[in-house]
Length: 262
Image 1 (tube, rainbow, N blue to C red):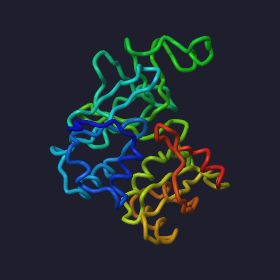
Image 2 (cartoon, one colour):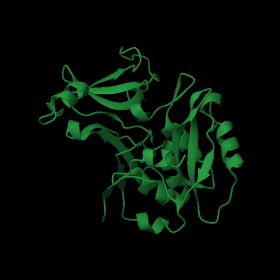
Image 3 (spheres, one colour):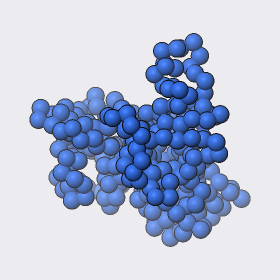
Image 4 (cartoon, helix red, strand yellow):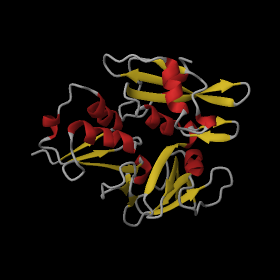
C-alpha cells in the first residue's frame, strides 16, 4: 500500500484537471503532502469533487519551510483547512512583520512577512556575510514569504514578498488571482505577473492554460475574475493563452520567463 506521497502543487493541479487521471489511481493512497509553493483550497476541493473522495479517505496536506530552516517549519495535520500550512513545529518561534512599517502584525487575517527563529534555523550563509546580514536579524530568519494567521493560529501563505504586484499602492498577491483563475471550469492552470502601467504603476496580467478541448475568450476570463475580486486586482494587463506554465523543478512558477513574454 502506498500510504503517502510527497508532491508539489503542479502535480495536484494535474490530478484535478486532466481527464486521464482516474479515481482508481488513488485507491492505495492515503496522504498527499504538498510543498514548495502555495496550494489553494479550491485546488484541493477540485480533487475531492472529481474523484468523489472525502478528506477521511484521502488527506491532502501542506507544510512550509526553507533550506535555511532545515527545512520544515510548519505542518498542517488536521486536514480541515485545505489552504493552510498549519502550525509551527516544536520550538519554532514565529513573527509576522509588516513589510512597510516593520512592526509585528497582531490582528488575525492581517498579512506580514514570516520571520522564524529556533534551533532549526541556520547560523548563516557560508562565506557570505552580506547575505547573512540581509536575511538574519537577531537570530530571526526573514523568509520573504507573506502570510496571515487565523483565530486558531493556523497560518496561510499568500505569496512571495518580491512577487507582489503593486497597483496604485495596493499589494496584489499573484497566487490569489491564480487560485481564482483555476476555479474557472475551462482552466487547467494559470500564472499572474505584474506589467508596467503608466497610471497604476503595475497591473496584473494572466497566462492561462486551458483544459483539453476547451475554448474561451480572453474577455471571458477577465470578466470571470472581475466578478470575484476587488477592482484593483482585475486583470487589466490582459490575458494570454499558453500551452504550459513554466516552473522550476520544485514547482515554483518562473515569473521572469512570463514577464519576458509581455
